[in-house]
Amino acid sequence: MKKHSKVLRQADTRAAAMGSLGSTVDLGKNLSPEKYMAAIADLRAKLSAYNETLSHADAAKNAFHASERVVQDLSERMLAGVAATFGKDSVEYEKAGGVRKSERKRPSRSKTIVA
Image 1: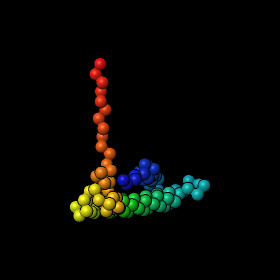
Image 2: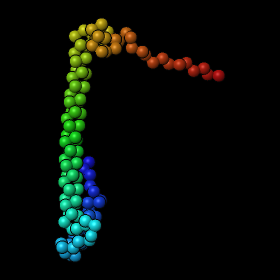
Image 3: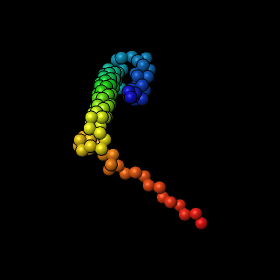
């Protein structure tokens, strides 16, 4: 999600308004429209770089999740292949990471006493 800067928006508005004062205005204490515009440009460049980095991170995250889904699908298919070849109650199936059919817990029904 791209970041927007409220400070940058306000600074752009203020710089446009201050442009009517003229570019030669020196407000003292090292404050000038040129320095203000340079600081705004620096902030804009850093925001752009930040958003570009976020885009790269999002692309890397999406690629990671896609690879994760591929590996998950292959894992399921590999286990199904072992089950088809050796059976779900085989030692090989258990070695491949499956739970043997004979060792699976079955839900037990609790008997209710009717009074």
